[in-house]
Length: 125
Image (cartoon, rainbow, N blue to C red; front, side, top):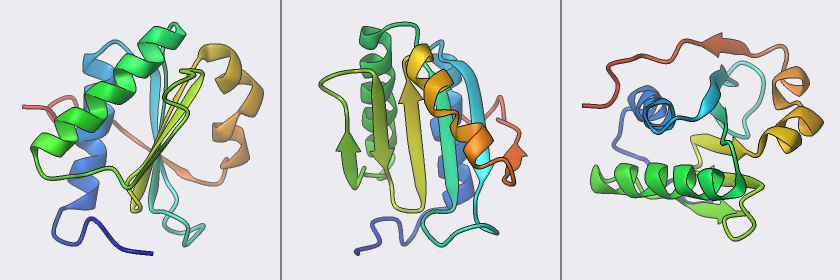
C-alpha cells in the first residue's frame, strides 16, 4: 500500500483534523492512539455530526482543508450516504458518524485499550 504521508508530521495532521471537526461543530471528538495496538493505522479520530448533511459537510471540510496543506486523503467511504464517513489517510483514519451509528458501533469501546489523546485547541490556525 502506498504511503501518501511521507513528509508530514502525522501527530500534527491528526490534531489539525480533530480541531477542524471541533471548529465545525462536531460532537464528542475523540483521538485514539492505536500505535501500540495495531499496525493498521496510528490514530483514529472519531466525531459525530448532528445529521447526515452535517456528517457529509464535516468530512468535506476536513478533506478540503487538509488538502490545502498538502495532506491528501487516500480513500473515502460513505460520503454519499452521510451516516458514517471514513477518511483514510493511511497513518490516521477519520470516522465521522451520525449519532445513532456511533452508538451502535461503539468504536471507542471496541478500541478501549487505546490511549485517548487530547485535542489541541490551537491546532487550526
